[in-house]
Image 1 (tube, rainbow, N blue to C red):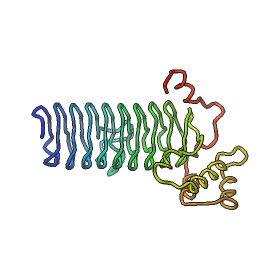
Image 2: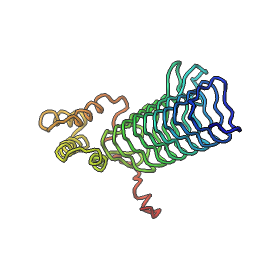
Image 3: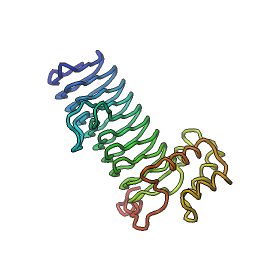
Image 4: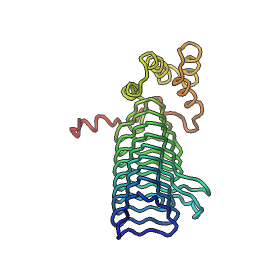
Length: 273
């Protein structure tokens, strides 16, 4: 069902059962798959929307990147299946011919979140209200990013990590970790997420042993990894953590910065539980 006030470009490909609400604008080179619902006043161009995704009012998807190097080369946005894109979310198309900004399956982008050009969000990522991702940010499977967080271009946010609201980062965020502050730093394992996804007590213990070494002030990162490999127990997740750290181009936020501003006391002062 397409509302009579919607404006649809002739190049758009729209499945028969798609619902498009009042005043929606569908621009050039848009492909909308089965079961999608676009509620009202949304704007889409140069994008592909996967099955079952819901797009809320005033969301904007596929508009040009905020990149001075972009010269109108053909790029797009790809949104996966069963995502929920809330009000006023913006997702810019990529920069660089043939590239895509990608949002995986079952992602939740809350009110006012911004996904910049060339970002890649894996499946089941949650961006809370007003999260801002700079260009080329990669977000791993199941990561949860708290509201009003700000993240520098080209960083990686590891799988199944959680970052508190009011945080910011200019370095990579370790997989499976919980983080807060400006700049954000790892404060422990994301134990709740690990339990929910069925990780055993033994696996969590092995991961925690490695985490404590990686974040210990007694060792630099290379020394910590060497100690884990020579003395520690290692499982698949620890191997992932080590590979993530060793492949980092911007460094991983493992130690607490001396000028870090913690997000949690700010929330406490506001009386938020």
